[in-house]
Image 1 (cartoon, rainbow, N blue to C red):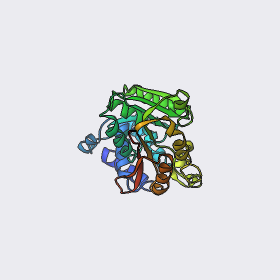
Image 2 (image 1 turned 60 degrees about the vertical axis):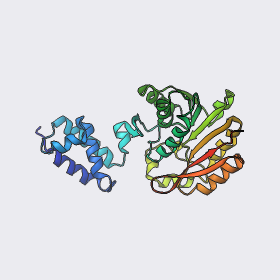
Image 3 (image 1 turned 90 degrees about the vertical axis):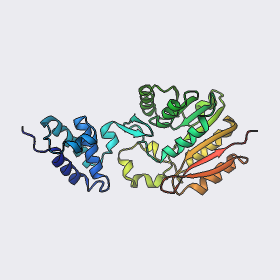
Image 4 (image 1 turned 90 degrees about the horizontal axis):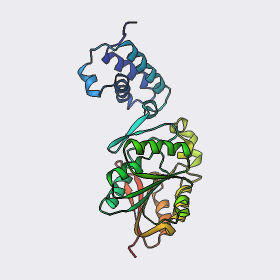
Length: 286
């Protein structure tokens, strides 16, 4: 079978088909999928716009487009997605890493990098994006990661191995594995589910991403509340807690933090869109 499309034509056809699904990203997604099908970068596509697609690669490309056309997220189609400075394996067992979470990571790095042997725990690790990146960039830290989902932990372990990051993984409920081992920690970071239960079915992400990683209970803060109940007994003096939240949960989350840690300094960090995104809790040294 002769190829029907050159590079430019294939991209235009894919953009046409993907525009109803995601108008703003249709062109970008077409480029990403064609790059994956051909095993080239986007610069190659631009430089070779008139090259005809080989039949096998054309078939593969339009199979990928068909999946995206049905609403399947691009990261799940590719099997990987970028976060901070590296790519992570992603499957439908884990939430897709978001750029907003890089704000939490940067606050975690600022705290951890100057310290020797800081003990860090990532709660609700999912793909392991936070724990693995921090461990890779802070090799002197001792990094633990916890998740209640066994399939998610399998993905996280694969990512740790791929990036040669030294992370110890525990399966369990929030900080319970840390409590059971009578550990004391210097930092807790958590990107827990924070979408109110009643809103989850209304969101497009709920069609493909794991509900367990989205549903934050009646007000979206159920797991944050439980984490803050567990945390005080585990934190060393001077510890930092970093909690990702929804844009409209800032005031409620700060109140929970101050109730749990009355002497701590609590502040909200804003994302690139100017929305409240991370609660930063810094405990006094003594």
